[in-house]
Length: 64
Image (tube, rainbow, N blue to C red; front, side, top):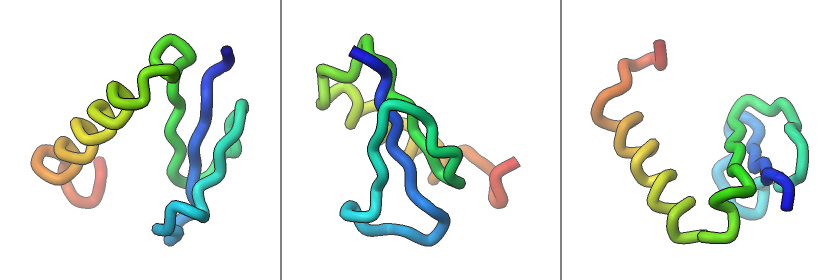
């Protein structure tokens, strides 16, 4: 199984606007999920929650 890439264009916030593919789309916001974890959706969601929490509480604004 290959890595999966999920991306959105800046300003897109709806789930139906997310692009999914097997290669990068070079959009402003992109997530690469390794094929070693892709099969465990819960682990991917938990990882995304950790990143979201980090951006909310630790990262400076604007992102440095």
